[in-house]
Length: 94
Image 1: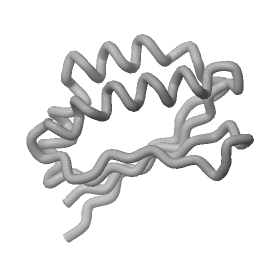
Image 2 (image 1 turned 120 degrees about the vertical axis):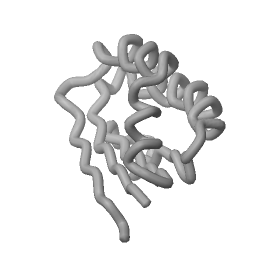
Image 3 (image 1 turned 90 degrees about the vertical axis):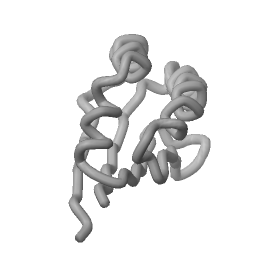
Image 4 (image 1 turned 90 degrees about the horizontal axis):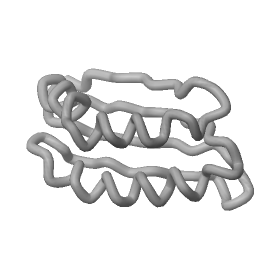
C-alpha cells in the first residue's frame, strides 16, 4: 500500500475555489483502479492551509492516477491559486 500526504497553501481568496474543484475531481478519483482513500482536511474554516490524505493499492496505481487527464486538467486549473509550493510525501507501507 502507498500513502501520500500533500500539504497545500492556497491563497485565502482561492481556498473555496480549490475545495470545490477538489470535490469535483475526487468523485472521479475514487473510481480509479487502486484508489482506497482520497480525502481533504482543514484545521478550521479560518485556516488557509489544507491537507490531502491518499491511500493507494500500489505505486503503479498512484503513478497512473497522476498521469490521468482529469488530474492534468485539475493541476492546470488550480496551479495559480497557491501562495507557495505544495509539500508532498509518499510512504510505502509493507
